[in-house]
Structure formats: C-alpha cells, structure tokens
Length: 254
Image (cartoon, rainbow, N blue to C red; front, side):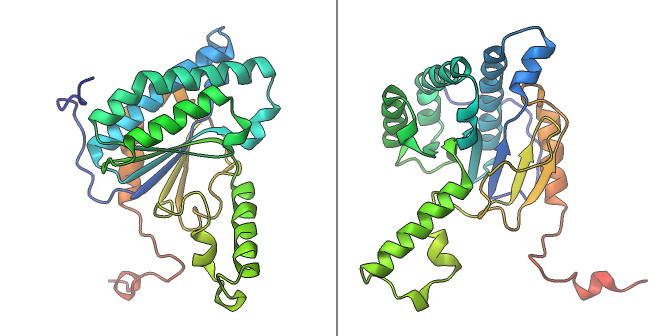
C-alpha cells in the first residue's frame, strides 16, 4: 500500500482545527435519489470518509473523529444494521495498510459489547497495529452516544470516590474529562454535519462546549474537497473567544 499521493493540490490554511469532528449524514437519502438501496449510499459514504482522512493527513490536522454509527442507530431495520456491520469489517480490512503507511493512529469509541465479535476483533487489531503511530489521530465513533459516555464517566468517578482514590471535594471538570472516551484528545474545535440536519445527535456533547459548528445541505457522499476546504478556511478566519469579549482594539471605531 503506497503513501498518499503528494501531487493533490491542498490549500494553505493557517489556522486549522486541532480536532475536527464530522457527523456523516445523508447516505440513505443520497442512495434513494439514485433509485438505489441504502447500503449503496453507505458504501459511497465510506469512499468519502477515505477522502476526508486523506485530506486531513495532508493538511496535518491533529485529530479527526468520524461519527459512523450512533447508539440510537440500533433502532434501524436489522437488514440495514447487518449490512453496515459487514461494511465496517470490509472497510477496516481494506484500509488498514493505508493507515499504517501514513502514520495514522486509529481508535474506536462506543459500546463494543453491542458489536459483532468479528468486528470487535478487527477494530482491536487495527488499534493495536496503529497504536505507536504519531500522525493523524483518527477516531471512529461506532455504537457511540455522548450521554451514555458521560454517565459511564460519572460512574467511574463514584467508584473512585468510594474506593478512596479521589476526594469528592477534588472533583472538577477535568475529573470527568479524564474519564471519558476522548480523554486523550483535545476538545473539538470544529464540527461539520452534512445533509441539512441542524442538530448534533448526541455527538461529543461534553467535548464540543466551545466548538464551531457548520451545517451543510450537502449529502455526505456528495461532500467534495472544495466545500471541505472552504469550511476550514472560514473556520480559520473566525475568532474563538471562549466566553470573553472582543479585543478592545477591535471594538474601537475609526
């Protein structure tokens, strides 16, 4: 497996997000518009995810999290779920070499216990094989829900207090942050959601506290490089104040 081609034109964007999260939505509608089954849209969505990973590597973004399957998605028809699980397995098998060659570290977050054992094995193998890589930190959220993750974090704190490892008076925001699935990554700087939906769907609620959010009407398989780069460029020009006011010099009128 060769490294990513260096001849692809990548814009120079000065202020990139350290941690980018993408809610990849619209695969089913994309397929329906073409008279195809939903799985056809999911397969196209995988190819789009590969492109985004490639672009993130080239741009030297520190961390990319892709929301692939939420805890609520188990409510979908069994046939679609089974097709998705098989697609996840094929995707991991196909692209493990690409991640290794490009120094990408892979991690899955979410409730592994809900997943097929064969998929769990492949996920854990990919995590182990790429664990020493130092490039892009790629996280795939499968069977993930942020509320559930926060509850698990709180239960860990309770156990630590009961066992005397921490004092309840020491509990602060960092105490919980360190017990969540994304404790090894910076908080989200930018979230992109495709398909025209304007909600965050239980995605990284704790970690998105100060993130910019960009909603686009584009269905995920149709999300092209130009739009991706334009969103990043717009982000690079935004002023993130984290609750503070604008700089005094910017408030003064000429």
